[in-house]
Image 1 (tube, rainbow, N blue to C red):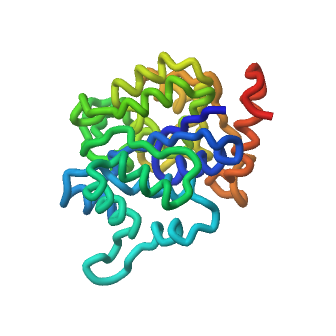
Image 2: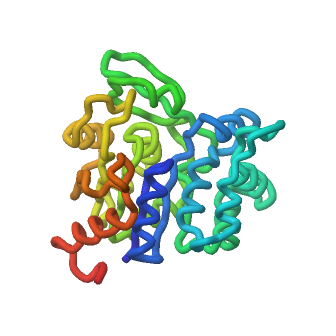
Image 3: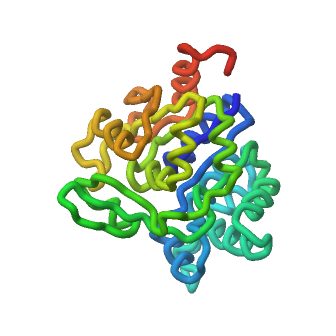
Length: 278
């Protein structure tokens, strides 16, 4: 089974951990619009795409018990590096050494024993811009996260470059999983590039959306599954299957258990989709 997972942050890392139990042919397409924390500091000092969510996905797809993967998540807590995740610094340096973000991700994937591939939704510095239902404009991922009443999001510049490998992965996938994760600032931030939206609309694979287990304060306050699906539709995305199931939570919380999510994805694919998975 060829699988693609799209989004960002902790939610995408969860879906990757779930999918890697079902297939080794897995591609992560990751939002690069994050502007907070260590990632935001690096964005302000370089012209590179945001590394933070890419780092999380590399770790999620790495060889289990990898010491290097654990080190990539290490965060400094003093001095000039206070707040920086080591993996963000490594990825930034590798981008310069390897002559580009995608070669850097491929090289780090080899070192980490990644099964599959991690690709950025865009290969350049982009900003997320939202328009609210009352016409206000909000700029930046962190600001948008705290804003209720969002109507649409887009990227600036609107013509950001998408790697051909991203479009090829989407076109050849048997299943494409959106989410879980922040609806506007992770999932739709990753699909906001027009070429990605068009590729998803044309893709023959099974498009699946995993809804968050609880609304997020700010951007999805008061949302149920219907509001999530309506937001996807406003952005040209119409999933064939929506997973909205609180029983998939880890330890009764509001985060998905990757093992339970894997079973849910497998079971939904088994309905009307033959010979993809055992």
